[in-house]
Image 1 (cartoon, one colour):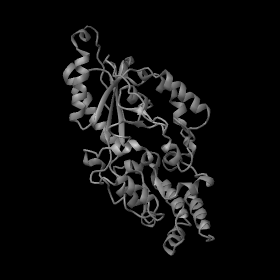
Image 2 (image 1 turned 135 degrees about the vertical axis):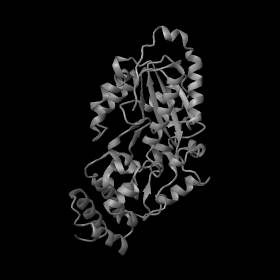
Image 3 (image 1 turned 90 degrees about the horizontal axis):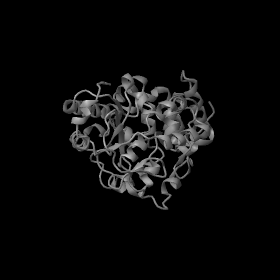
Image 4 (image 1 turned 180 degrees about the horizontal axis):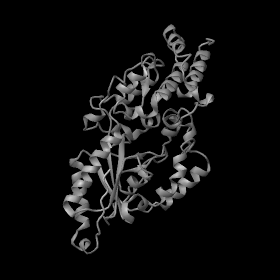
Length: 372
C-alpha cells in the first residue's frame, strides 16, 4: 500500500477542494465504484459505541477489536509521518454476481431450504474483495496525486482499524440499518465499502436520513438471534462470525441453528425489503467461481487441502484455512438429512489429524445416530 507525504501549506490556497471533491467522485465512478462520498473524521460517537460493545464482550474471539480500538478512535494514527487526517473518501462497490437473475432472493431462500446444499455467502463466491477494492482505491489515490501532487493518505479495505460503516454513513452513501450494515435506497446492502483516509480538507457530504421505520425483518430473520436489539449485534451468536472469525469449536447449542450455511450468512440481508434494489456488479471479479452457488455439502467436504487451496486461490474463503472449512462443513452435514452419502462423508473424516475437525465430525455423526 503506497503512502505519500507532502506539506500542503501555501499550496492549499491554490487548491479548490470543493471542485476536487467533485472530481474525485467522478474518477471513482470511472474506476467502477457505484458511489463515492466525503466524510469528516469525527468518530467520537462511534468510538463510544465500540467501547460499550467491547465491555459487553460481544466481540467474541475478535481480540483485535479491543487491541486496535485506540487506532479506530483517531484516524490520524493510520497516516504516515505525523500527518493529520482531515477527511475520508468513502466508496462502495456492488457485488451481486452478474447473471443471477431478477428472482435471486427467492432462489437464495430456496437454497437455504435444501439441507444438502452448501450455502456460501454471496459476497464470497467470487474474487477476494480486499484485492479488488484496494487496487481501485489505490488507482483513485494515484489519480488525485496526479492532479495536486503528493499527499498523505491511507487506503483501507477492511484491512485496517477503521469505522467503515460510520464513515460511509457520514459520507452520505447510506444509513445504518438495524442489522448494523449500511443501507442505500438505490442499492440495498449488497456492496463492499472502502476508504481513503487523507490529510486533504475536502468538504464533507451530508448524511442521509434513515429509512428503516418500524421494520424489524432483519431482526426476525436472524437464525441465531444475534441481532439482540435494533443496531446491536452480538457477534458471538452471528453465523458470519462463527463460520469465519471464530477459530475454536463452535458452541454446540448454536450448531443446529447454523443449518447448511458453511461460510457467512445473508439472511438479514435477504429479508431486508431494500435489497430488492440491490444492483448487479459491473465487474466480473464477483462472478461465481467453482460452482459455489450450486455445490453440495458432501461435494465440498470431499475436497483435499490441495483442492481447497487451489479452488479458493484469490478468494476470501481461503483466509479461514482448510481446518475451519472442514469444521463448518461438518456442522452443516450434522444438520443434513441422514443419508448413506452424508454418513460416509463424515466417517471418512472421523480420524482427521485435526482435533477441531474430529470433534465436529463426531458431533455430526451422533446427530445421525452413528457412534464413532
